[in-house]
Amino acid sequence: MKKVVLFAFCMPLLFACNSRGGKSKKEKVTAPQPATESVFDNNDYHTLSNAGEVFGKHLALDIEVDFKQKQIRGTASWDIEKRKTEADKFILDTRDLKIDSVQYEDGSKAAFESGETDSILGTPLSISLKPETKKVKIFYRTTPKATALQWLDPAQTFGKKQPFLYTQSESIHARTWIPVQDGPGVRYTYTAKVKVPKGLMALMSAENPQALSEDGVYDFKMDMPVPAYLMALAVGDIKFQAIDQRTGVYAEPVMLAKAHKEFEEVGAMVHKAEELYGPYRWGRYDILVLPSGFPIGGMENPKLTFCTPTILAGDKSLVNLIAHELAHNWSGNLVTNQTWNDFWLNEGFTIYFERRIMESMAGKDYADMLWEIGYQDLEATVADLGEQSDDTHLRLNLRGRNPDEGLTDIPYEKGGHLLRLIEQTVGRNKMDAFLTKYFNENAFKTMNTRDFTEYLNKNLLNEVTEWKANVNINEWLYGPGIPKTCPRADKVRFNKVDTATAQFLKGDMSFAAKTGKWSTFEWMHFLRKLAKNNITLEQMKTLDHAFDLTKTQNSEKADLWYLLAIKTKYEPAYPAMEAFLNITGREKFLQPLYKEMMNSPEGTKMAKSIYRKARPNYHPLTQRVIDEIVK
Image (cartoon, rainbow, N blue to C red; front, top):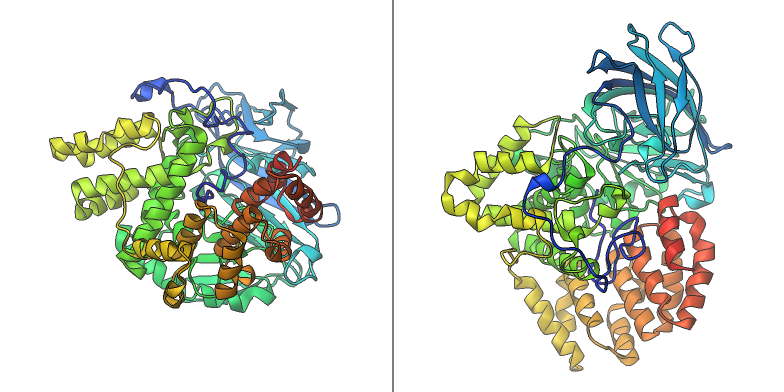
Protein backbone atom coordinates (compact mmCIF):
# COMPACT_ATOMS: atom_id res chain seq x y z
CA MET A 1 0.00 0.00 0.00
CA LYS A 2 1.31 3.40 -0.92
CA LYS A 3 2.00 5.55 2.12
CA VAL A 4 -0.75 7.98 2.85
CA VAL A 5 0.38 10.87 5.02
CA LEU A 6 1.49 14.24 3.70
CA PHE A 7 3.42 16.66 5.92
CA ALA A 8 1.66 18.55 8.69
CA PHE A 9 -1.59 18.87 6.79
CA CYS A 10 -2.45 15.17 6.65
CA MET A 11 -3.50 12.52 9.10
CA PRO A 12 -2.83 8.79 8.79
CA LEU A 13 -5.00 6.71 6.49
CA LEU A 14 -8.30 5.25 7.67
CA PHE A 15 -8.05 6.28 11.31
CA ALA A 16 -6.97 9.75 12.38
CA CYS A 17 -4.61 9.29 15.29
CA ASN A 18 -6.20 11.84 17.58
CA SER A 19 -9.66 10.37 17.17
CA ARG A 20 -8.99 6.65 16.81
CA GLY A 21 -6.91 5.70 19.79
CA GLY A 22 -3.49 7.10 18.91
CA LYS A 23 -1.89 9.74 21.10
CA SER A 24 -1.91 13.41 20.24
CA LYS A 25 1.16 15.52 20.91
CA LYS A 26 -0.58 17.05 23.94
CA GLU A 27 -1.31 13.75 25.64
CA LYS A 28 0.79 12.20 28.33
CA VAL A 29 2.49 9.13 26.91
CA THR A 30 3.97 6.07 28.50
CA ALA A 31 7.68 5.46 28.72
CA PRO A 32 9.33 3.70 25.77
CA GLN A 33 9.30 -0.08 25.82
CA PRO A 34 12.61 -1.74 26.68
CA ALA A 35 14.77 -2.45 23.68
CA THR A 36 13.97 -6.13 23.46
CA GLU A 37 11.52 -8.25 21.50
CA SER A 38 10.50 -10.00 24.72
CA VAL A 39 8.10 -7.16 25.52
CA PHE A 40 5.82 -8.61 22.84
CA ASP A 41 5.11 -12.13 21.77
CA ASN A 42 4.61 -12.96 18.11
CA ASN A 43 0.99 -14.09 18.30
CA ASP A 44 -1.40 -12.49 15.84
CA TYR A 45 -4.07 -10.84 17.98
CA HIS A 46 -6.04 -9.66 14.96
CA THR A 47 -7.37 -13.03 13.88
CA LEU A 48 -9.88 -15.19 15.73
CA SER A 49 -8.98 -18.22 13.62
CA ASN A 50 -7.14 -21.34 14.74
CA ALA A 51 -4.71 -21.53 11.82
CA GLY A 52 -2.06 -22.93 14.12
CA GLU A 53 -4.24 -26.01 14.69
CA VAL A 54 -6.20 -26.36 11.45
CA PHE A 55 -4.92 -24.60 8.36
CA GLY A 56 -6.98 -23.63 5.32
CA LYS A 57 -4.39 -24.32 2.62
CA HIS A 58 -6.52 -23.76 -0.51
CA LEU A 59 -9.67 -21.75 -1.17
CA ALA A 60 -12.11 -22.38 -4.02
CA LEU A 61 -14.56 -19.51 -4.39
CA ASP A 62 -17.77 -19.78 -6.40
CA ILE A 63 -19.55 -16.45 -6.12
CA GLU A 64 -22.01 -14.17 -7.89
CA VAL A 65 -21.82 -10.38 -7.84
CA ASP A 66 -25.33 -8.89 -7.61
CA PHE A 67 -25.36 -5.14 -8.24
CA LYS A 68 -29.11 -4.83 -7.67
CA GLN A 69 -28.84 -6.24 -4.16
CA LYS A 70 -25.28 -4.92 -3.71
CA GLN A 71 -24.29 -8.33 -2.48
CA ILE A 72 -21.74 -11.05 -3.11
CA ARG A 73 -23.11 -14.52 -2.47
CA GLY A 74 -21.96 -18.05 -3.09
CA THR A 75 -19.62 -20.61 -1.58
CA ALA A 76 -16.14 -20.71 -0.12
CA SER A 77 -14.67 -24.23 -0.15
CA TRP A 78 -11.60 -24.80 1.97
CA ASP A 79 -9.10 -27.64 1.68
CA ILE A 80 -7.82 -28.05 5.21
CA GLU A 81 -4.75 -29.47 6.85
CA LYS A 82 -4.66 -30.44 10.50
CA ARG A 83 -1.57 -29.17 12.24
CA LYS A 84 -2.70 -30.79 15.47
CA THR A 85 -4.20 -34.24 15.10
CA GLU A 86 -6.61 -33.77 18.00
CA ALA A 87 -8.14 -30.59 16.51
CA ASP A 88 -11.88 -30.94 15.93
CA LYS A 89 -12.76 -27.38 14.88
CA PHE A 90 -11.92 -25.27 11.84
CA ILE A 91 -12.25 -21.61 12.88
CA LEU A 92 -12.44 -18.77 10.39
CA ASP A 93 -12.72 -15.00 10.65
CA THR A 94 -15.92 -13.29 9.58
CA ARG A 95 -17.30 -9.82 10.14
CA ASP A 96 -20.84 -8.88 9.17
CA LEU A 97 -21.16 -11.98 6.94
CA LYS A 98 -24.31 -14.09 6.72
CA ILE A 99 -23.49 -17.80 6.95
CA ASP A 100 -26.35 -19.90 5.55
CA SER A 101 -24.96 -23.41 5.87
CA VAL A 102 -21.81 -25.53 5.80
CA GLN A 103 -21.22 -28.88 4.08
CA TYR A 104 -18.62 -31.61 4.26
CA GLU A 105 -17.07 -32.81 1.02
CA ASP A 106 -19.63 -35.64 0.70
CA GLY A 107 -22.46 -33.09 0.69
CA SER A 108 -23.66 -33.80 4.22
CA LYS A 109 -24.38 -30.91 6.56
CA ALA A 110 -21.65 -29.80 8.92
CA ALA A 111 -22.35 -28.42 12.36
CA PHE A 112 -21.17 -24.84 12.82
CA GLU A 113 -21.62 -21.97 15.20
CA SER A 114 -20.79 -18.30 15.34
CA GLY A 115 -18.92 -17.17 18.40
CA GLU A 116 -19.05 -13.96 20.36
CA THR A 117 -18.70 -10.84 18.25
CA ASP A 118 -15.78 -8.50 18.83
CA SER A 119 -16.31 -4.91 17.73
CA ILE A 120 -12.96 -4.86 15.89
CA LEU A 121 -12.26 -8.46 14.95
CA GLY A 122 -15.75 -9.62 14.07
CA THR A 123 -17.23 -13.05 14.69
CA PRO A 124 -15.40 -16.39 14.63
CA LEU A 125 -17.04 -19.10 12.54
CA SER A 126 -16.38 -22.49 14.13
CA ILE A 127 -16.99 -25.60 11.99
CA SER A 128 -17.03 -29.05 13.57
CA LEU A 129 -14.66 -31.53 11.92
CA LYS A 130 -14.83 -35.29 11.60
CA PRO A 131 -11.56 -37.21 11.85
CA GLU A 132 -11.56 -37.75 8.08
CA THR A 133 -12.61 -34.21 7.06
CA LYS A 134 -10.34 -32.64 4.47
CA LYS A 135 -12.69 -30.09 2.92
CA VAL A 136 -15.63 -27.90 3.94
CA LYS A 137 -17.94 -25.73 1.82
CA ILE A 138 -19.46 -22.59 3.31
CA PHE A 139 -22.57 -21.00 1.81
CA TYR A 140 -22.57 -17.29 2.62
CA ARG A 141 -23.64 -13.73 1.70
CA THR A 142 -22.15 -10.31 2.27
CA THR A 143 -24.07 -7.53 3.98
CA PRO A 144 -24.21 -3.73 3.52
CA LYS A 145 -21.75 -3.43 6.43
CA ALA A 146 -18.90 -5.03 4.48
CA THR A 147 -16.07 -2.53 4.89
CA ALA A 148 -14.03 -4.13 2.11
CA LEU A 149 -16.61 -3.39 -0.58
CA GLN A 150 -17.41 -0.21 -2.42
CA TRP A 151 -20.43 -0.45 -4.70
CA LEU A 152 -20.56 2.39 -7.22
CA ASP A 153 -23.56 3.48 -9.23
CA PRO A 154 -22.90 4.39 -12.89
CA ALA A 155 -22.86 8.10 -12.03
CA GLN A 156 -19.91 7.48 -9.70
CA THR A 157 -17.73 6.05 -12.47
CA PHE A 158 -15.87 7.79 -15.28
CA GLY A 159 -17.96 6.15 -18.00
CA LYS A 160 -21.30 6.93 -16.31
CA LYS A 161 -22.95 3.89 -17.95
CA GLN A 162 -22.23 0.82 -15.81
CA PRO A 163 -21.91 0.13 -12.07
CA PHE A 164 -18.57 -0.78 -10.50
CA LEU A 165 -17.41 -2.83 -7.51
CA TYR A 166 -13.98 -3.08 -5.96
CA THR A 167 -12.55 -4.49 -2.74
CA GLN A 168 -9.96 -3.18 -0.29
CA SER A 169 -9.00 -6.02 2.05
CA GLU A 170 -6.03 -4.60 3.98
CA SER A 171 -5.68 -4.85 6.87
CA ILE A 172 -8.47 -7.08 8.27
CA HIS A 173 -11.32 -6.37 5.86
CA ALA A 174 -11.11 -9.57 3.77
CA ARG A 175 -13.26 -11.22 6.45
CA THR A 176 -16.14 -8.93 5.48
CA TRP A 177 -16.47 -10.54 2.03
CA ILE A 178 -14.95 -14.03 2.48
CA PRO A 179 -14.92 -16.41 5.46
CA VAL A 180 -11.15 -16.72 5.81
CA GLN A 181 -8.29 -17.12 8.27
CA ASP A 182 -7.55 -13.41 8.08
CA GLY A 183 -4.02 -12.94 9.35
CA PRO A 184 -0.96 -11.82 7.35
CA GLY A 185 0.93 -14.84 8.66
CA VAL A 186 -1.50 -17.29 7.00
CA ARG A 187 -0.83 -17.93 3.30
CA TYR A 188 -2.94 -20.06 0.96
CA THR A 189 -3.58 -20.63 -2.74
CA TYR A 190 -6.95 -20.01 -4.36
CA THR A 191 -9.17 -20.45 -7.39
CA ALA A 192 -12.38 -18.57 -8.07
CA LYS A 193 -15.39 -18.70 -10.33
CA VAL A 194 -17.08 -15.31 -10.43
CA LYS A 195 -20.39 -14.58 -12.15
CA VAL A 196 -21.11 -10.94 -13.01
CA PRO A 197 -23.67 -9.15 -15.21
CA LYS A 198 -23.01 -9.63 -18.92
CA GLY A 199 -20.98 -6.83 -20.43
CA LEU A 200 -18.84 -6.34 -17.31
CA MET A 201 -15.34 -7.65 -16.66
CA ALA A 202 -14.19 -9.25 -13.42
CA LEU A 203 -10.58 -9.10 -12.23
CA MET A 204 -8.83 -10.55 -9.19
CA SER A 205 -5.39 -10.75 -7.59
CA ALA A 206 -4.79 -13.78 -9.80
CA GLU A 207 -4.38 -14.79 -13.44
CA ASN A 208 -6.73 -12.39 -15.24
CA PRO A 209 -8.68 -12.19 -18.49
CA GLN A 210 -7.86 -9.58 -21.09
CA ALA A 211 -11.24 -9.67 -22.84
CA LEU A 212 -14.89 -9.84 -21.86
CA SER A 213 -16.56 -13.17 -21.15
CA GLU A 214 -19.71 -13.52 -23.23
CA ASP A 215 -21.65 -15.22 -20.43
CA GLY A 216 -20.31 -13.04 -17.58
CA VAL A 217 -18.52 -15.95 -15.89
CA TYR A 218 -14.80 -15.68 -15.14
CA ASP A 219 -12.36 -18.25 -13.76
CA PHE A 220 -9.29 -17.29 -11.75
CA LYS A 221 -6.25 -19.06 -10.35
CA MET A 222 -3.60 -17.98 -7.86
CA ASP A 223 -1.21 -20.90 -7.46
CA MET A 224 1.26 -19.06 -5.23
CA PRO A 225 0.28 -18.75 -1.55
CA VAL A 226 -0.95 -15.31 -0.45
CA PRO A 227 -2.40 -13.89 2.78
CA ALA A 228 -6.04 -12.79 2.99
CA TYR A 229 -5.31 -9.07 2.87
CA LEU A 230 -4.13 -9.57 -0.72
CA MET A 231 -7.51 -10.97 -1.81
CA ALA A 232 -8.92 -8.53 -4.35
CA LEU A 233 -11.87 -8.33 -6.73
CA ALA A 234 -13.00 -5.63 -9.16
CA VAL A 235 -16.00 -5.69 -11.49
CA GLY A 236 -16.98 -3.04 -14.00
CA ASP A 237 -16.83 -1.67 -17.52
CA ILE A 238 -13.13 -2.41 -17.90
CA LYS A 239 -10.84 -2.76 -20.91
CA PHE A 240 -7.21 -3.89 -21.23
CA GLN A 241 -4.21 -2.54 -23.15
CA ALA A 242 -0.79 -4.14 -23.09
CA ILE A 243 2.40 -2.22 -22.28
CA ASP A 244 4.74 -5.08 -23.15
CA GLN A 245 4.63 -8.87 -23.02
CA ARG A 246 4.14 -9.09 -19.27
CA THR A 247 2.72 -5.70 -18.24
CA GLY A 248 -0.47 -3.88 -19.10
CA VAL A 249 -3.21 -1.52 -17.96
CA TYR A 250 -6.87 -2.08 -17.14
CA ALA A 251 -9.21 0.90 -16.88
CA GLU A 252 -12.62 2.14 -17.83
CA PRO A 253 -12.65 2.69 -21.61
CA VAL A 254 -12.76 6.49 -21.32
CA MET A 255 -9.62 6.40 -19.12
CA LEU A 256 -7.63 3.68 -20.85
CA ALA A 257 -5.60 5.76 -23.33
CA LYS A 258 -4.65 8.30 -20.66
CA ALA A 259 -3.64 5.57 -18.21
CA HIS A 260 -1.65 3.67 -20.81
CA LYS A 261 0.28 6.80 -21.75
CA GLU A 262 1.07 7.52 -18.10
CA PHE A 263 2.31 3.99 -17.45
CA GLU A 264 4.12 3.25 -20.71
CA GLU A 265 7.45 2.97 -18.84
CA VAL A 266 6.21 0.41 -16.30
CA GLY A 267 7.67 -2.50 -18.28
CA ALA A 268 11.09 -0.89 -17.97
CA MET A 269 10.40 -0.29 -14.29
CA VAL A 270 9.90 -4.02 -13.71
CA HIS A 271 13.27 -4.70 -15.35
CA LYS A 272 14.92 -2.10 -13.12
CA ALA A 273 13.43 -3.76 -10.03
CA GLU A 274 14.72 -7.16 -11.16
CA GLU A 275 18.20 -5.74 -11.69
CA LEU A 276 18.17 -4.63 -8.07
CA TYR A 277 16.78 -7.60 -6.17
CA GLY A 278 16.17 -10.57 -8.40
CA PRO A 279 13.43 -11.97 -10.64
CA TYR A 280 9.80 -10.90 -10.52
CA ARG A 281 8.07 -14.12 -9.47
CA TRP A 282 4.40 -13.41 -10.10
CA GLY A 283 4.16 -13.80 -13.87
CA ARG A 284 2.32 -10.73 -15.12
CA TYR A 285 2.40 -7.27 -13.60
CA ASP A 286 -0.72 -5.32 -14.54
CA ILE A 287 -2.32 -2.16 -13.18
CA LEU A 288 -6.01 -1.42 -12.69
CA VAL A 289 -6.97 2.25 -12.55
CA LEU A 290 -10.04 2.46 -10.36
CA PRO A 291 -12.82 5.06 -10.22
CA SER A 292 -12.09 8.18 -8.21
CA GLY A 293 -13.62 6.87 -4.96
CA PHE A 294 -10.64 4.56 -4.29
CA PRO A 295 -9.53 5.61 -0.78
CA ILE A 296 -5.76 5.09 -1.06
CA GLY A 297 -2.96 5.65 -3.54
CA GLY A 298 -2.41 2.04 -4.47
CA MET A 299 -2.77 -1.53 -3.26
CA GLU A 300 -0.21 -4.16 -4.10
CA ASN A 301 -2.60 -7.00 -4.96
CA PRO A 302 -0.46 -9.75 -6.57
CA LYS A 303 -0.40 -9.67 -10.37
CA LEU A 304 -2.74 -6.66 -10.40
CA THR A 305 -1.96 -3.39 -8.62
CA PHE A 306 -5.08 -1.37 -7.81
CA CYS A 307 -4.38 2.35 -8.09
CA THR A 308 -6.03 5.73 -7.78
CA PRO A 309 -6.69 7.86 -10.86
CA THR A 310 -5.20 10.83 -9.00
CA ILE A 311 -1.73 9.75 -10.15
CA LEU A 312 -2.65 10.33 -13.80
CA ALA A 313 -0.98 13.73 -13.88
CA GLY A 314 -0.34 13.63 -17.62
CA ASP A 315 3.44 13.93 -17.27
CA LYS A 316 4.40 10.68 -15.49
CA SER A 317 5.39 12.76 -12.46
CA LEU A 318 3.58 10.57 -9.93
CA VAL A 319 4.56 7.11 -11.16
CA ASN A 320 6.71 6.60 -8.08
CA LEU A 321 3.48 5.27 -6.58
CA ILE A 322 3.60 2.45 -9.13
CA ALA A 323 7.25 1.86 -8.23
CA HIS A 324 6.08 1.45 -4.64
CA GLU A 325 3.35 -1.07 -5.46
CA LEU A 326 5.71 -2.95 -7.78
CA ALA A 327 8.33 -3.15 -5.03
CA HIS A 328 5.75 -4.79 -2.78
CA ASN A 329 5.98 -7.87 -4.98
CA TRP A 330 9.26 -8.51 -3.17
CA SER A 331 8.69 -6.84 0.21
CA GLY A 332 5.22 -7.72 1.44
CA ASN A 333 3.83 -10.08 -1.17
CA LEU A 334 6.90 -12.33 -1.33
CA VAL A 335 8.14 -11.88 2.26
CA THR A 336 5.20 -10.85 4.43
CA ASN A 337 4.98 -9.28 7.89
CA GLN A 338 3.88 -12.02 10.25
CA THR A 339 1.56 -9.75 12.23
CA TRP A 340 0.36 -6.17 11.87
CA ASN A 341 2.74 -5.24 14.70
CA ASP A 342 5.50 -6.00 12.18
CA PHE A 343 3.99 -3.82 9.45
CA TRP A 344 7.26 -1.93 8.98
CA LEU A 345 8.75 -5.08 7.46
CA ASN A 346 6.33 -4.63 4.56
CA GLU A 347 6.31 -0.88 4.15
CA GLY A 348 9.75 0.27 5.30
CA PHE A 349 11.41 -2.15 2.90
CA THR A 350 9.08 -1.04 0.12
CA ILE A 351 9.80 2.66 0.65
CA TYR A 352 13.52 1.89 0.38
CA PHE A 353 13.04 -0.30 -2.70
CA GLU A 354 10.71 2.25 -4.37
CA ARG A 355 13.32 4.99 -4.07
CA ARG A 356 16.06 2.76 -5.36
CA ILE A 357 13.90 2.03 -8.42
CA MET A 358 13.24 5.72 -8.96
CA GLU A 359 16.92 6.56 -8.55
CA SER A 360 17.79 4.04 -11.25
CA MET A 361 15.16 5.51 -13.58
CA ALA A 362 15.31 9.25 -12.86
CA GLY A 363 18.62 9.90 -11.12
CA LYS A 364 19.89 10.53 -7.62
CA ASP A 365 18.69 14.13 -7.36
CA TYR A 366 15.15 12.95 -8.11
CA ALA A 367 15.30 10.18 -5.49
CA ASP A 368 16.73 12.67 -3.00
CA MET A 369 13.56 14.72 -3.33
CA LEU A 370 11.47 11.64 -2.47
CA TRP A 371 13.64 10.98 0.59
CA GLU A 372 13.34 14.59 1.78
CA ILE A 373 9.57 14.72 1.24
CA GLY A 374 9.35 11.46 3.17
CA TYR A 375 11.47 12.84 6.02
CA GLN A 376 9.17 15.85 6.27
CA ASP A 377 6.21 13.47 6.47
CA LEU A 378 7.96 11.52 9.22
CA GLU A 379 8.66 14.66 11.23
CA ALA A 380 5.03 15.74 10.96
CA THR A 381 3.72 12.32 12.00
CA VAL A 382 6.01 12.16 15.03
CA ALA A 383 4.91 15.66 16.02
CA ASP A 384 1.28 14.63 15.71
CA LEU A 385 1.61 11.35 17.62
CA GLY A 386 3.99 12.77 20.24
CA GLU A 387 7.76 12.43 20.27
CA GLN A 388 7.66 9.89 23.10
CA SER A 389 4.60 7.99 21.87
CA ASP A 390 4.83 4.21 21.69
CA ASP A 391 3.14 4.53 18.29
CA THR A 392 6.36 6.03 16.91
CA HIS A 393 8.20 2.75 17.53
CA LEU A 394 8.79 0.67 14.43
CA ARG A 395 7.70 -2.51 16.16
CA LEU A 396 4.15 -1.67 17.21
CA ASN A 397 1.93 -2.97 19.97
CA LEU A 398 -1.57 -3.04 18.46
CA ARG A 399 -3.04 -5.66 20.77
CA GLY A 400 -6.66 -4.76 21.50
CA ARG A 401 -6.68 -2.08 18.81
CA ASN A 402 -7.70 -1.89 15.19
CA PRO A 403 -4.59 -2.65 13.11
CA ASP A 404 -5.57 0.18 10.76
CA GLU A 405 -4.31 2.47 13.52
CA GLY A 406 -0.80 1.35 12.60
CA LEU A 407 -1.11 2.65 9.04
CA THR A 408 0.78 5.87 9.73
CA ASP A 409 3.99 7.21 8.24
CA ILE A 410 6.05 5.51 10.98
CA PRO A 411 6.36 2.04 9.40
CA TYR A 412 6.86 3.60 5.98
CA GLU A 413 9.30 6.43 6.54
CA LYS A 414 11.02 5.44 9.77
CA GLY A 415 11.38 1.93 8.37
CA GLY A 416 12.69 3.16 5.03
CA HIS A 417 15.20 5.50 6.68
CA LEU A 418 16.45 2.64 8.88
CA LEU A 419 17.27 0.64 5.76
CA ARG A 420 18.96 3.69 4.26
CA LEU A 421 21.09 4.00 7.40
CA ILE A 422 22.08 0.34 7.07
CA GLU A 423 23.02 0.96 3.42
CA GLN A 424 25.15 3.96 4.35
CA THR A 425 26.81 1.95 7.13
CA VAL A 426 27.72 -1.18 5.18
CA GLY A 427 27.87 0.19 1.63
CA ARG A 428 25.42 -0.21 -1.23
CA ASN A 429 26.96 -3.36 -2.70
CA LYS A 430 26.72 -5.28 0.55
CA MET A 431 23.22 -3.92 1.20
CA ASP A 432 21.99 -5.07 -2.19
CA ALA A 433 23.54 -8.50 -1.78
CA PHE A 434 21.91 -8.82 1.65
CA LEU A 435 18.44 -7.84 0.41
CA THR A 436 18.64 -10.18 -2.57
CA LYS A 437 19.58 -13.02 -0.24
CA TYR A 438 16.80 -12.03 2.18
CA PHE A 439 14.10 -12.07 -0.50
CA ASN A 440 15.34 -15.36 -1.99
CA GLU A 441 15.72 -17.25 1.26
CA ASN A 442 12.40 -16.10 2.71
CA ALA A 443 10.25 -16.17 -0.43
CA PHE A 444 6.59 -17.02 0.21
CA LYS A 445 7.24 -16.99 3.95
CA THR A 446 6.43 -14.60 6.77
CA MET A 447 8.80 -12.61 8.94
CA ASN A 448 8.57 -10.98 12.36
CA THR A 449 10.74 -8.25 13.82
CA ARG A 450 12.70 -10.48 16.20
CA ASP A 451 13.57 -13.00 13.50
CA PHE A 452 14.53 -10.27 11.06
CA THR A 453 16.87 -8.72 13.59
CA GLU A 454 18.59 -12.07 14.08
CA TYR A 455 18.77 -12.56 10.30
CA LEU A 456 20.21 -9.06 9.78
CA ASN A 457 22.88 -9.54 12.42
CA LYS A 458 23.85 -13.01 11.24
CA ASN A 459 23.98 -12.20 7.53
CA LEU A 460 25.26 -8.62 7.58
CA LEU A 461 25.92 -6.56 10.70
CA ASN A 462 28.00 -9.13 12.58
CA GLU A 463 30.61 -8.87 9.82
CA VAL A 464 32.06 -5.65 11.29
CA THR A 465 31.74 -4.78 14.98
CA GLU A 466 31.22 -1.07 14.36
CA TRP A 467 28.29 -1.69 11.99
CA LYS A 468 25.99 -3.02 14.68
CA ALA A 469 26.85 -0.15 17.02
CA ASN A 470 26.37 2.45 14.29
CA VAL A 471 22.97 1.13 13.30
CA ASN A 472 21.76 0.49 16.88
CA ILE A 473 18.68 -1.23 15.55
CA ASN A 474 16.94 -1.54 18.92
CA GLU A 475 16.75 2.24 19.13
CA TRP A 476 14.84 2.24 15.85
CA LEU A 477 12.60 -0.73 16.60
CA TYR A 478 11.66 -0.06 20.22
CA GLY A 479 12.52 3.59 20.78
CA PRO A 480 10.32 6.62 20.16
CA GLY A 481 10.66 9.43 17.67
CA ILE A 482 13.35 9.89 15.06
CA PRO A 483 16.82 8.62 16.04
CA LYS A 484 19.63 11.15 15.76
CA THR A 485 21.37 8.81 13.31
CA CYS A 486 18.52 9.14 10.81
CA PRO A 487 20.08 9.95 7.42
CA ARG A 488 19.08 13.02 5.41
CA ALA A 489 19.11 13.31 1.67
CA ASP A 490 21.01 15.90 -0.35
CA LYS A 491 18.81 18.88 -1.16
CA VAL A 492 20.32 20.02 -4.45
CA ARG A 493 16.98 20.66 -6.12
CA PHE A 494 15.10 21.71 -3.00
CA ASN A 495 17.75 24.29 -2.12
CA LYS A 496 16.89 26.04 -5.35
CA VAL A 497 13.21 25.88 -4.42
CA ASP A 498 14.03 27.44 -1.04
CA THR A 499 15.74 30.30 -2.84
CA ALA A 500 12.68 30.78 -5.02
CA THR A 501 10.43 30.75 -1.96
CA ALA A 502 12.48 33.45 -0.28
CA GLN A 503 12.34 35.54 -3.45
CA PHE A 504 8.58 35.22 -3.67
CA LEU A 505 8.04 36.19 -0.04
CA LYS A 506 10.06 39.37 -0.74
CA GLY A 507 7.86 40.17 -3.74
CA ASP A 508 10.41 39.07 -6.33
CA MET A 509 8.84 36.94 -9.10
CA SER A 510 12.00 36.49 -11.13
CA PHE A 511 12.08 32.81 -10.14
CA ALA A 512 8.91 32.12 -12.15
CA ALA A 513 10.85 31.52 -15.38
CA LYS A 514 12.62 28.57 -13.76
CA THR A 515 9.52 26.74 -12.59
CA GLY A 516 8.77 25.28 -16.01
CA LYS A 517 11.20 22.46 -15.25
CA TRP A 518 9.97 21.85 -11.71
CA SER A 519 8.72 18.38 -10.86
CA THR A 520 5.65 17.72 -8.76
CA PHE A 521 7.90 17.33 -5.73
CA GLU A 522 9.51 20.71 -6.18
CA TRP A 523 6.05 22.25 -6.31
CA MET A 524 5.06 20.33 -3.19
CA HIS A 525 8.14 21.59 -1.37
CA PHE A 526 7.40 25.15 -2.49
CA LEU A 527 3.76 25.04 -1.36
CA ARG A 528 4.68 23.41 1.93
CA LYS A 529 7.20 26.17 2.60
CA LEU A 530 4.57 28.79 1.88
CA ALA A 531 2.20 27.10 4.31
CA LYS A 532 4.69 27.78 7.09
CA ASN A 533 4.50 31.48 6.33
CA ASN A 534 1.51 33.74 6.73
CA ILE A 535 1.11 34.55 3.07
CA THR A 536 -1.45 37.18 2.17
CA LEU A 537 -4.49 37.17 -0.04
CA GLU A 538 -2.60 39.36 -2.50
CA GLN A 539 0.24 36.86 -2.64
CA MET A 540 -2.28 34.10 -3.39
CA LYS A 541 -3.62 36.18 -6.26
CA THR A 542 -0.11 36.73 -7.56
CA LEU A 543 0.67 33.02 -7.48
CA ASP A 544 -2.57 32.07 -9.17
CA HIS A 545 -2.12 34.67 -11.89
CA ALA A 546 1.43 33.46 -12.56
CA PHE A 547 0.89 29.70 -12.39
CA ASP A 548 -2.89 29.13 -12.72
CA LEU A 549 -2.75 26.84 -9.67
CA THR A 550 -6.50 26.83 -9.11
CA LYS A 551 -6.90 25.00 -12.41
CA THR A 552 -4.05 22.53 -11.94
CA GLN A 553 -4.83 18.93 -12.88
CA ASN A 554 -2.05 17.62 -10.64
CA SER A 555 -3.73 16.24 -7.52
CA GLU A 556 -0.71 16.70 -5.23
CA LYS A 557 -0.33 20.37 -6.18
CA ALA A 558 -4.09 20.92 -6.07
CA ASP A 559 -4.45 19.57 -2.54
CA LEU A 560 -1.73 21.80 -1.13
CA TRP A 561 -3.02 24.81 -3.06
CA TYR A 562 -6.57 24.34 -1.77
CA LEU A 563 -5.23 24.13 1.77
CA LEU A 564 -3.58 27.49 1.29
CA ALA A 565 -6.82 28.82 -0.18
CA ILE A 566 -8.77 27.81 2.94
CA LYS A 567 -6.15 29.32 5.25
CA THR A 568 -6.08 32.63 3.37
CA LYS A 569 -9.80 32.65 2.43
CA TYR A 570 -8.88 32.79 -1.25
CA GLU A 571 -12.43 32.32 -2.54
CA PRO A 572 -11.63 32.06 -6.30
CA ALA A 573 -10.27 28.58 -5.56
CA TYR A 574 -13.36 27.37 -3.71
CA PRO A 575 -15.40 26.11 -6.71
CA ALA A 576 -12.43 24.09 -8.00
CA MET A 577 -11.83 22.73 -4.50
CA GLU A 578 -15.46 21.66 -4.18
CA ALA A 579 -15.27 19.89 -7.54
CA PHE A 580 -12.05 18.20 -6.39
CA LEU A 581 -13.69 16.98 -3.19
CA ASN A 582 -16.69 15.66 -5.12
CA ILE A 583 -14.68 13.54 -7.53
CA THR A 584 -11.70 12.51 -5.39
CA GLY A 585 -11.98 9.74 -2.81
CA ARG A 586 -8.30 9.43 -1.91
CA GLU A 587 -8.28 9.95 1.79
CA LYS A 588 -4.92 11.65 2.16
CA PHE A 589 -6.34 14.54 0.15
CA LEU A 590 -9.73 14.64 1.85
CA GLN A 591 -8.73 14.63 5.51
CA PRO A 592 -6.58 17.79 5.55
CA LEU A 593 -9.04 19.82 3.50
CA TYR A 594 -12.07 18.98 5.62
CA LYS A 595 -10.06 19.37 8.80
CA GLU A 596 -8.84 22.82 7.77
CA MET A 597 -12.35 23.95 6.81
CA MET A 598 -13.64 22.90 10.22
CA ASN A 599 -11.29 25.39 11.90
CA SER A 600 -13.61 28.36 11.27
CA PRO A 601 -17.39 28.94 11.41
CA GLU A 602 -17.63 29.84 7.72
CA GLY A 603 -15.40 26.92 6.80
CA THR A 604 -17.49 24.53 8.89
CA LYS A 605 -20.58 25.57 6.97
CA MET A 606 -18.76 25.01 3.68
CA ALA A 607 -17.38 21.62 4.79
CA LYS A 608 -20.80 20.32 5.79
CA SER A 609 -22.38 21.53 2.55
CA ILE A 610 -19.71 19.89 0.40
CA TYR A 611 -19.65 16.67 2.41
CA ARG A 612 -23.40 16.11 2.13
CA LYS A 613 -23.02 15.93 -1.63
CA ALA A 614 -19.66 14.20 -1.81
CA ARG A 615 -20.08 11.53 0.87
CA PRO A 616 -21.76 8.89 -1.36
CA ASN A 617 -18.68 8.93 -3.61
CA TYR A 618 -16.35 7.96 -0.76
CA HIS A 619 -15.35 4.48 0.34
CA PRO A 620 -17.07 3.22 3.55
CA LEU A 621 -13.81 3.44 5.49
CA THR A 622 -13.26 6.99 4.28
CA GLN A 623 -16.80 7.93 5.22
CA ARG A 624 -16.12 6.69 8.73
CA VAL A 625 -13.06 8.93 9.05
CA ILE A 626 -14.56 12.07 7.49
CA ASP A 627 -17.70 11.60 9.60
CA GLU A 628 -15.45 12.07 12.63
CA ILE A 629 -14.07 15.32 11.22
CA VAL A 630 -17.25 16.88 9.84
CA LYS A 631 -19.62 16.78 12.81
